Length: 181
Image (cartoon, rainbow, N blue to C red; front, top):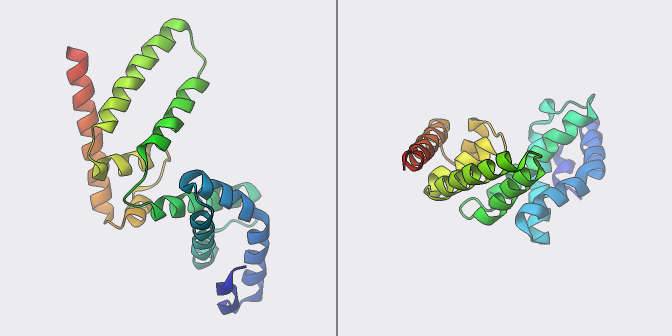
């Protein structure tokens, strides 16, 4: 299980973390595995997620199972992405965007317009340099805070915000340029 639990002196915290581990381990593993596609790496991400949760135990709202679940799921996602810090595959993110667009119900005309717009946006995003693309995806698609993105990517908060700002600016310029043609 979690070896670091032995280092925790507060028995109530220790038992709460053990309970959380038993309750959410498989969910977090599934989340990590969806990103990593490797059982060993996914298990490491789950362990890292619970270690982070233990360090930040005061942020866990034990009174709200939904908030606790969402908090732990977010941590697991961050840990999984962090393990691929410099190699997040754009194809997985493209698939998620495609799923979002497919789930939307609209008229044929709106669907056609959305496809053109979505493809132009995808092309603009894919044209970005990785140092802008990854923070942009984390902010826009996964709704991460700049602070979390900075921690995840090992950069300063100002640098993360600047990368996101630059990405938005470059995407906007490219879309405006294509719209003018």
